[in-house]
Image (cartoon, rainbow, N blue to C red; front, side, top):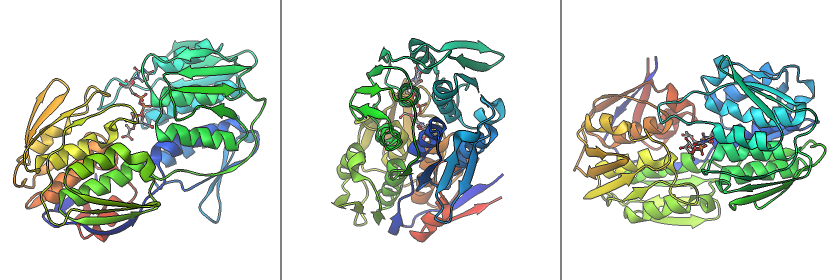
Length: 419
Ligand code: EPZ
């Protein structure tokens, strides 16, 4: 099993181009199931999760062609199968995103029930309730969700009990081909939901209010082809910015989406980093200083993203003072702190809060990654630590970060993949 070997203590300096956003690419690929003509998706990141989603589309009988400009052309007119098997769903929970499109377009979907994962129990009850409100019949049997509809789904007024990104995306995709109007209240406002809505609009959907907590969809009879480029990844961007700040370095990110990163950039400024935005370029310079501690409380967008919590926790471990990090979105997302303590961090957990006393430095150690963002945070901890850190189970990191060791090396980090 691959591991990352890091020799820490070097400030990062350099320039990177931001990849396409994983969490926008996955729903957009699922949305191609709704179109009766081929859709071309560009700016897809080269990640395991994206490959898994393409594999899932292939299993459904969808024709997927990679064109000469590395765009992926998806033709769902060849679909032969409506089942997302356990073998794929267990490796990627986002497979649940094919449920809404399949039942809306074909009146039938069988998707393996995604279980919990390292970060929490992660139910999908709100996806199912919403589809039922739109007329789908849902049965759960043998570990599978079976969804059926006789004819088209119908519009409905759905008030989501909790803000859910995937739930909003699934229901949005189902609503675009439903009969009549659907109103999604308490909808997720995440930029990735907006990117999905913009892609659906480019395919001919009638959607308004995306980016607010009320999305209104007027169903249309079919969707056509389009070409769509996935938005830049705000979490990948944030991760490299934090890595540069934690090491006292500087970085220039090109092709970023700073408008989607307000909460992240504000916290980075509080660490003492100088930040300049120029169009889609973000410049951060820590000028060799040790970061100031920042208090964090995760919340749905536009609040501070849970997907950046672990990285900021890593930065706080070596900050000049004490801080607290409150995780409100997932129940088990402070798990990486135990590994950080093995590197000399001083973190105490009480309920959903981590109390961190910043240390002058960490010491390298063998550590184990438990999920994608936890892995990224352990890499950051390794970059600031004295000595060698070996991060195990880095298959998690390959799900969400394109060539992380090459990109970190280009910034001057001493990091390599070993088996
Ligand atoms: C998406 O997961 C992201 N994944 C996650 O990114 C991200 O952490 C999360 O949104 C929150 O921003 C993708 O976009 C593929 P949710 P999702 O439904 O949609 C509860 C990463 O590292 N809930 O918004 O699964 C749920 O338990 C990842 O890239 C219900 O109770 O998250 C959680 O507490 C991991 N019932 C909260 O809502 C439901 O039916 C938010 O979850 C659905 C969710």
